[in-house]
Image (cartoon, rainbow, N blue to C red; front, side, top):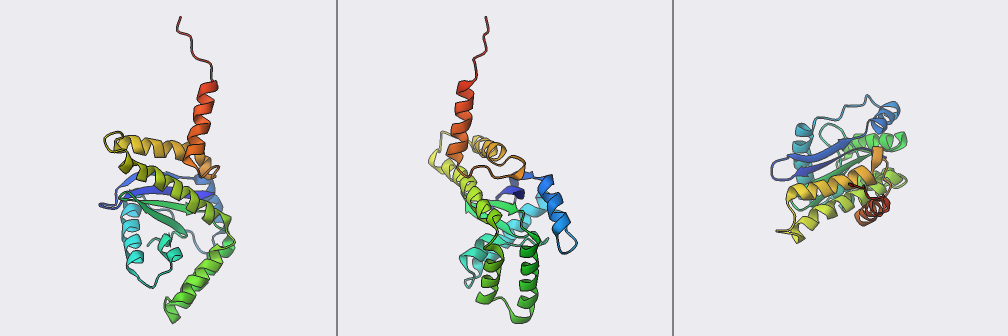
Length: 204
């Protein structure tokens, strides 16, 4: 289950599309080991994600996991972030209390020992048993694929049409924050099949 998702333009931090899921957010607040911070508005979060993703990419000692699973300046974690076609695709999965506790412990130790490979291992151990993170990765990759298709369809599809296609995938593949399918083709095929089975309206 997801707490929210965002598609952010890298050049200016503008949030092209976003969706938040209140049910998952309520569950997070109930199980959070510390006082939960509200998710910032899109303007603040979009700018922050661009900065955090850029900083993570510049650290050569980071593991691939740490480059794509980030913590926002406001404390949102684990924020799954992928880059595609000049955008950042960010998914915030709901994770169990145990993972949040392990993450806070690793951060506290990092303040004393510094961020090294051991820190990346600690984060990996916290995330390994959490299926929602893997699903978020797969769904984010599918949405990133929709954006990357825009470059292959130059002259055929406007950015507005690309966003609409991405939005349809979100609405039908991730209803209420539950990831039903991580394949854009499967979701579109399912919708096309449902449309074809509907009786045509008679106008006369």
